[in-house]
Image (cartoon, rainbow, N blue to C red; front, top):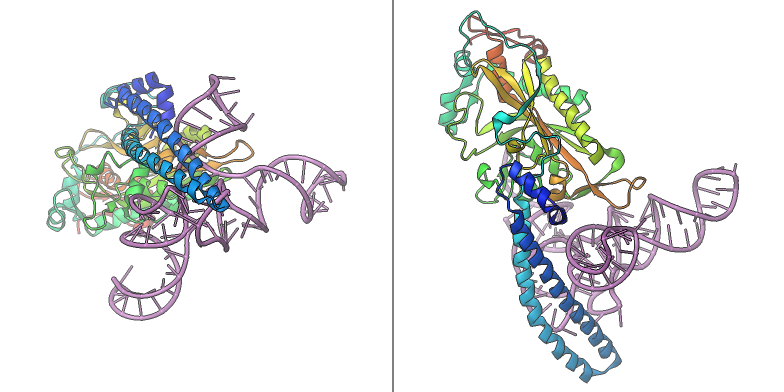
Length: 427
RNA sequence: GGAGGGGUGGCAGAGCGGUUGAAUGCAACAGUCUUGAAAACUGUCGUGCGGGCAGCCCCCGCACCGUGGGUUCGAAUCCCACCCCCUCCGCCA
């Protein structure tokens, strides 16, 4: 979230940023609350100071044995109590409202982000590879998968419901191969691998910004009120919640494979076919903690790291930078990587790499110290990126590597992970 | 799930109703000493918010001793609930 002081001192800039993001977040509402809040704080604290002084005095009188004077002073302080507690209550309400307002405000876009209202104003940065031309009618993965007995949509529905799938045989193996290939590749690049819980508590979801605003997108357990994680970013970032890191450790580079769970409220009707949008999907995630001066360089290298997976798999992709109106809640800058998907006859998002600057660090209180450079501690910058969405990679491989006879060639780099398998045939 | 013990500053660990934001030790930082280092000595050494201020490494105030409530003129200290950790028992992949 944004710092109250920053909003107070830069209202025009914040207002412009909110408009560029299509956010209805109201700077004026904040300023009004903030003014009221600070006035109340001043009042309450003045009374508290009085009370504290009087109480100390009572203590002194008691020790001197002046009981009568002490009793008189007690009566005086008792009067203060009433006005303090009613003011305190009012202050708490205003304070909660202010905090909630701040917590529901999105991040401010970095200056390098193109201004735009929607998706089609995102800007293509680079393109890699050439989409294949087929000399036969290529199938979509939602037809290929079942034909090869790799994906079972019907049984996914039976076991859990719509937008759940079951992978079987080569399908299950390919999924596992992709996960291991991605993790190994990131580990080789210096990312530390983690294995986090699939459930997380409210503080954790708050830390990365899913709460309080996006609770509807999350699955929640009825008894404990725990949430199924929508991405490993949540866990990897919160590993260091309420911690102060040592500057020399930075940047920290983490990776993890997890299943991700999204209720996707409001997403019904989009990408309904195949593996593209599911309630549960696998993803290998990258998260970094960086010094502010280095974070945008780290965003570049993280994006390249994600692209490396596609290059090794020889899947054509392009990179776009999201415009202000299309960015996620916590991001200051986001690159999307889109893979070529023949069934869409277009590029489709397969990774999203963001620099959240200090937006999450402030919520989650993740700081670092570096005595040789500054006194005290500062918020780190947090970054996250998919490396990659496994299901969409799965789909891209089936579609891009299919052959006229309905079989699928296994990309070279995956063969060791599939015990040498070169071609996937119907089982 | 049951019984018992415990949660205090970066770490360890006192305090158990009053002037304690908190003893002491370690670590860290600055300085003295030293050719340099170590040792020794001296000093500094929590966070957040509000106010003063053009601004601050400055000053004042408020809050914070797991979390939330309560008792009291006054709570780290007493009471209640919850969370977490440890030990033992039970259960279990």
